[in-house]
Length: 385
Ligand SMILES: Cc1ncc(COP(=O)(O)O)c(C=O)c1O
Image 1 (cartoon, rainbow, N blue to C red):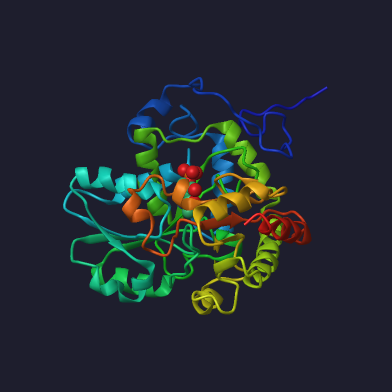
Image 2: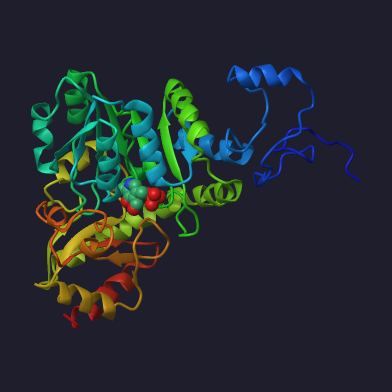
């Protein structure tokens, strides 16, 4: 017979459950009136409404903050929600945003919304990252970047970007989805905020969508205000799945990086494949910077051109047996796609190429399968080109 109970929704059974309980409650019964004044002041003692806070979500926020060695983390419904929350919280009409062409395609759509709201947007090619000073203007309030970038895995020097941001008094935001906290800690390198599509390697199993924003306690308060206002809160069930993914995250990240190294080295020697981009390869243009700012390997994503035409890339992908033709990345299964036809669809055609992406460029995210199985699969599919 259970003798002890607790009012804490996370320890309802007296002892602490090994797995954080999924608290699905939308609202909580007030036990006294004293709490109501505090709600108006924005200082809520205890939980009241899911859009504000949820105990299951909060546990995962603390875990991701710890992984990035950051004071705090705000979790939200998707990776793009995280990016949009950062823009909405810190940019106003008249401000300028400097953002790299080499970011996830959906930023292009977000930039159209920002421009409608009076924010000017300056697009910079990753190859210009060392000349960022030339793009930053007095109105620049934020530099937003990914490294390695999506889809070409270009590497941008975070310390140099921070120096350019400092000159303008702007904040530096780094999307760390491709690198993951296992390989890169942008806050240590000077970033003000880190964002993640936790849908990817943090979750790791293609079964949840979530976003995370990591930074100081002050940033937590500002971003929490936005999340509560616009309702980009994550549901408790997805938070629980994310917590489960995080338990094996280090193991998966290590294995994916080992696999990616082996697969990219194989691709470099396959005459059907060109422009193999993976920061771990010693002849990759980003290798030197990656060696300085990444650790424990270089992540699980790479890009390369297949044959000469898009049909070559399509024939190759169709012949793969073990690697799945699907978007997304960072999961236990290996996934391959043609960015021009998928992740870059958010952009007008003329913007999709021109920065190194070709019609036959593919993005491969390796999973945790045996590396030799992946190499054998690529080898046999090469005959279809
Ligand atoms: C680097 C990067 N950031 C952000 C996102 C957006 O994440 P989500 O799909 O969870 O909204 C993606 C999606 O592919 C991504 O690759």
